[in-house]
Image (spheres, helix red, strand yellow):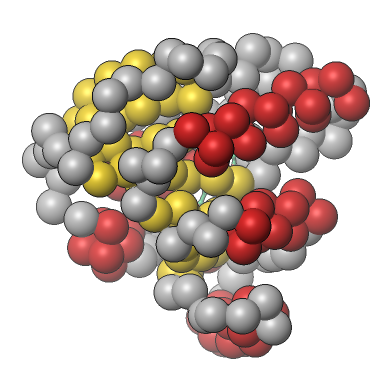
Length: 189
Ligand code: GDP
């Protein structure tokens, strides 16, 4: 259960990271995947800012949860209109984070349940394998699918992931309807 949460630090470049806590859980996902909405839904408060606009300076936000765990909001990726330079900047920020934070205990990879495995999602999954990161997958906006579409998607995503090796836990959530949120919190904490 999340009893307290506060924004600890906003990081724009390497070297600005806060000292590690007991655990660190990072959240990654394509821009517009519903990451801020999910975080706010987990927090039970509107702390994370929804949909930042292309071109806006990207940052990594560290939230302290229950005084002992960081929830780390990684910058969204895959803006359709992003320039190569912007993409490189985003990539540098993420890679530096993975290189630097040995304290990272779990990565939550968010994908839109309506269209998982976009090119940028695959890029993230490649990094997960490269860095041998413990991870789980969160399929967002479940309310946009019927119950039967949800089970079909869940199965096909699990099949898709099993092709990449070890099968991570996969969650189907809706921030809007609070579907799967408690279950996810219980797994994370
Ligand atoms: P971010 O860019 O990944 O942080 O995505 P946001 O949280 O800002 O959400 C992007 C858009 O998707 C917004 O218009 C949200 O209202 C919408 N959205 C986010 N989560 C859900 C959800 O669970 N269900 C539905 N239907 N829409 C959602």
